[in-house]
Each structure stands twice: as C-alpha cells, then as structure tokens.
Amino acid sequence: MGRLAVAVVLVLVAWSVGEAKKEKEKVCNKGWECSGSIYCCNETITDYFQVYQFENLFSKRNAPVAHAVGFWDYQSFITAAAVYEPLGFGTTGGKQMGMKEVAAFLGHVGSKTSCGYGVATGGPLAWGLCYNHEMSPSQSYCADDYKYPCTPGAEYYGRGALPVYWNYNYGLVGEALKINLLNHPEYLEQNATMAFQAAMWRWMTPMKKKQPSAHDVFVGNWKPSKNDTLEKRLPGFGMTMNILYSDLVCGQGYIDSMNNIISHYQYYLDLMGIGREFSGDNVDCAEQKALNPSGTSASS
Picture 1 (cartoon, helix red, strand yellow):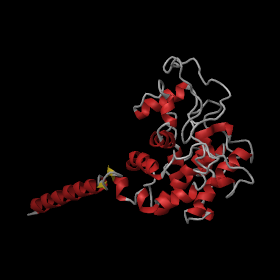
Picture 2: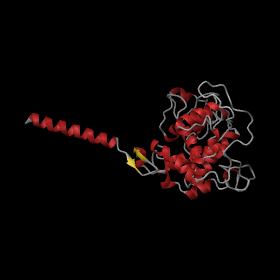
Picture 3: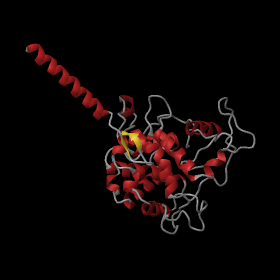
Picture 4: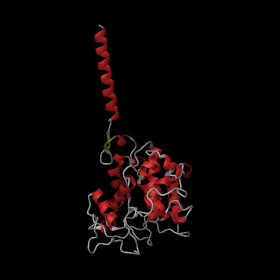
C-alpha cells in the first residue's frame, strides 16, 4: 500500500510538471496579425492602436509641402508590425506597456522623418513621416566592405522610417529581412511596409552579442550590469537612444537632437491617451556613456 501511494504521488507529480510545462509553452493565435506565440495571448496592436490614432500622430504627413505625400499609412505600419508582434513588439506586458512601446518606437520614427520646425502649422511635432529619404545627401555613403561591397550605380543615402545609411547597413538589414537591399537600396523609399519593417528589425535586434535591443531596454527585459549602472545606462526610453544612435545623441548633455526625440515620444503618449506623466524612468540619455562608442550604427 505504501508503494502504491508513492507511485500515485509520483504520477501526480509527473502530471503536474507536464501541465506546468504545457502552461509555460502556451501559445495563442490571432490570425494574420499574431500567431504561434505566447505574446499573441496579450492584446495586439490593432486592439489598442487604430487608424484614427495613426492619423492623429502624423497629421501633417500628407500636407502639400511634405516630401512623401501618400507614401506612409496605417496599413503599412500594421502589416510590418505583424512580423514582430509574435516576438513581443507591442505585445509585451499589458495594454499600457504595448501602447507605450508603440509610442516610443514611433517617437524615434517621427523625429527622424520630421520636417517640422518652430512655427510650422500644427506645431513642430505634427510633421513626422514627412520624408521617406534623405533630400540632399552630403556624401556617397559607400565604404570599402568585404561582406557588403557597394553595388555599382546604387546609392546608400538615408532611407526608411529609421533611416538606413551606408552600404554595409543596407547589406545587414537586407540580409535580415531576406530582401536584396544591397543591390536595391531604393526599395526602402518605394515600399512603406518594407521601410517600417526595416525600422522594427532595428528596434527589436541587438547590434552585438550579449547586448540588449532597444525593445529589451524599454519593456523591462534587460538588467543593467554593474558597469552599465556606473556609466548611467539604465532601463528606459533614454537607453533606446543609446542603442540606436550611440554618442551621436547620448552623453552630450541636453542637446537639441536628444530633446527632439523625447518630445516626439511624449507628444505621442499624450495623443494616444496615456499621458507624458507615464513616460517612465530614465527618459533621457544626457549623461549616459555610449554602449557602442562612435561606430556607424544601422540608423545613425
């Protein structure tokens, strides 16, 4: 009888471990937007971010003086997002965290594609997605690179939602997206879904092994090391700027380029109904040391 009781207990333990494992491996399917992932069990982006909100955030993008009229739209954004939602983009944590991440990502995008200025109609922050490419390239952006050599005739000036510069960055992004951007960098100014997808890849992908992505540091997936803490690199929106732009923006005090990105993020938080008071800790990177000093990053 004692042995039988032990056997029953062992069976129950094995069953409960199996059930726990099943629970741990739980995935959800929500059709085209998000499937085959535990993140899809959370609210997805279309649950809390609709067309009218996209229009509010980028209200002047199709004004007659804008430079990419008719290019950017909600459908392109959400189609690109569907690739990354199963990986946690906009689907990590609860609804508020999802909304904040969308505001944070688009804050970078809006700032980097804006043609707003101080007295612009609607204010300087209403002009995100005004561009889809660099208007007057200052150089050729072709560097000697064994892995990603320049294609004759191709030009590697800034294009996209988080503009990509240089042949080696087009090669890297294209390889990740399985698109031949090295031979055809112009795709990023011809296809808005592709342009958003390239930017989301940059947001979701660490640039070096054992480093976090911008997504990781924003949603709380990253724990800073002792060295990070000493160099004032802490989780929050500020660290996303460090990862995306390094010392072009960070560690230089409260410079305009940094303040502009923060202003877009907080403006979008307000418009999305969250409010800038929920920007989170460590919003700036004024005193952060660069994680990867002065390399040319994929969106620098």
